[in-house]
Image 1 (cartoon, helix red, strand yellow):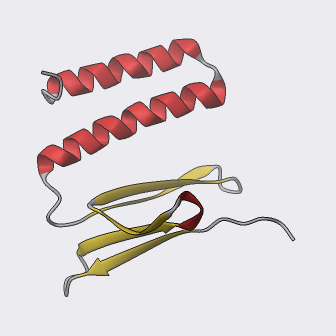
Image 2 (cartoon, rainbow, N blue to C red; image 1 turned 90 degrees about the horizontal axis):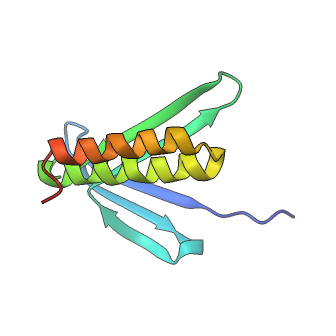
Length: 109
C-alpha cells in the first residue's frame, strides 16, 4: 500500500455564499484546523494542459494584508520556479518584478 498524505480545506460561508472562515488541516505537517484569511490553490491538469485554480479569501481579510499575501505568494512562486526549472535568468526577472510590485504597493519601507 502506498503512503498517502491528506490536506483538508474547510470553508464556512455566509448566507450569500461568501467565505467567512477558512480552515485547513495538514496532519502530516502537524496542522489541525488552523484558521486562515486567504488561500490560493493551483493544480496542473495534464490532460487539458491547463491550470485549475481556486482563490478564496474571507470578507474580513484586510486589503493591506492581501497585498502582502500576494507579494509573498509571488516571491514563493519565484523560488519554486527556480528550484523546478533551474532557469536563473527568468528567476532573476521574476524577482525583479516582485521587487517592483513591493515598491509600487509601498510594502518596502
